[in-house]
Structures are given as structure tokens and as C-alpha cells.
Length: 332
Image (cartoon, rainbow, N blue to C red; front, side, top):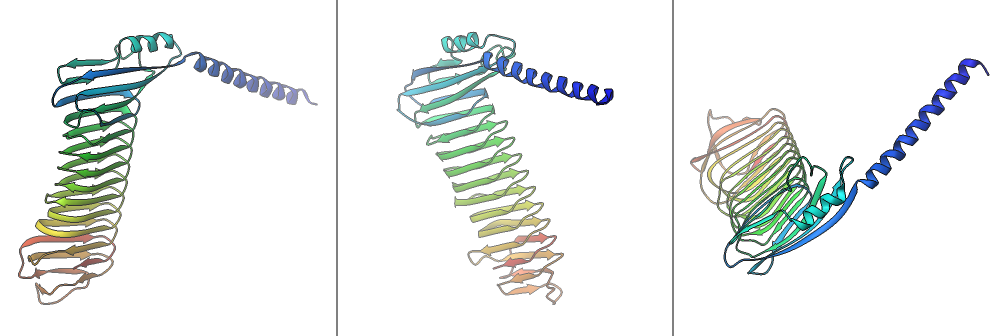
């Protein structure tokens, strides 16, 4: 075998050995620098509760429980290459990051933050029904159920589920889906990437997603404003003003216009079903497709253009505007 080939084989063997040793060393370091623990706290309250939670990393679950207690159950995990994780866990277990001042309860990130960067805490909390709530986590999903509210819930990255809230809800996540059901108030929802489902909302809505579909169903009047960078939008039983915009994807809405309705899609069909006998001023345009109208209309200019229609339905009234780059428009 030529000398050059022998040298190349030797180099490959040395590199492979170094990689295996490195992997083994990394595994040992990670195993040695990982610890788990837990803590529980039962806090007595005697009236409406204000709960504020801030978590660096870890999922959060908050549900309705007893009327006179806030029960906190937490699982703690710590990982570090450079410090004793057992000491970190023991310190948190002995000094849980919880403060109580009457019916006001604060759960905070452990201090100092630079020491505890490798700590993840998973919370499972029960609260009285009459609780106002603000909950945020840097990364991790959240589930909030059956409290009076109002509720503010945020995650840097993670899905959000919010059900059975008796007042307004604000929900924000950098990345992840948002699901809501049975909210007795207005909702304000935003996700950088992920779908949004909000059903049985007794009030108005502002909904934003950078990428993902939006489905919304309303049970009480309120204005609706929905926008998706990429994904379809479906708005059901809307009573109020409505705006919907999407870069690509269809738009579907049914309800009663109690204000202006405006719908714009870069690419996708638009389907509009109106209730009631109120008139509206219509403008509809598609660059590729047809405009179909199921109600009698007085057309401005006297001619019906299959791709652009401007006129009055039932004598006119509020504005109804529908524009799409490609796709048909149907209005009934």
C-alpha cells in the first residue's frame, strides 16, 4: 500500500476516535449535570385571587379548584456543565419562587437568572374560579381552564389552550398553535407561526398569525379583525364589523353586517353569506375568477362585469368589499 494511502487511513482513524471520545465525554458531562426535583405549596385565600406567573422554561397548567386555596405542584429539572445541579434543585425546593400578599400571588423565575439558566419548571396549579390571571413562559405550552378572568397568557415558543373563561382573553406565542373555546368576552390572539381556533366567543376578536389557518365562531356581537400571512380564514356567525386579510388562502364568512365588511386575499376564493335584510354598498373584484352575487343588485354604470362589480344591494348601506388576486367571489 502506498505511503500516502497509509497516512490518509491513519488520519481517518484518529478523527473517528476523537469524535467517539468527544461524544462519550459529552454524554458523561450531561449525565453528571442533570438533576430532578419537585415542590408543593398550598396557599389559603379568602376572596378574588390575582395570580401572576413568570416561568423561564417549562409547561404550565392552571385549572379551577377549591374556592379557598391555590395549590401549586411543580417538577423541577436542572442541567449544567459548570455548576452543581443538585445544589440548584435543593435551593429551589427549599425556597420555592412563590410570594403571597393576601389574595395576590406571584410565582417568579428563580434568582439569580444567570445561575439558573439550565432550570426548567413544570407547573400544575389549581385556583379558585374567581381568579384574574397573567401567565408567561419563555418556552413551553400552557393550558388555562375554567376561571373567571380576565386572562393574559404568553409563551415565547409553545402552544396555548384556553377554555371556559368568564371575561376577556389575551394570548400571545412566538411559535405554536392557539386553541380557545367558550370565552365570555373579547379575545386578542397572536402567534408568529401556528393555526388559531377560537370557538364560542361571546364578543369581538383580533387575531393574527404569521403562518396558519384561522377558524373563529362568535356567540355574541362584536367586531372581528383577522389576518393570516399564509392560511385560510373562516369566520362563523359574526354580528358586527369584520375585516379579514390573508396573503394566500381562502376567506369564508357568514353573519350579519353591523358595520363595514372588508376582505382581501392575495390568492384564494372568498365566500360571503349575509343574514338579515340590511342593505350594503358592494365592491368586489378578482383578477382571475368570477364574481357571483345571489341577491338583486343595482350596478353602477349599468353593466355587470364578471370580474369587478360595484353597486348597491337592497338599496345600499354599510360597505362590503371583497378583493382577491386569484379565485372566485361568491356573495349571498
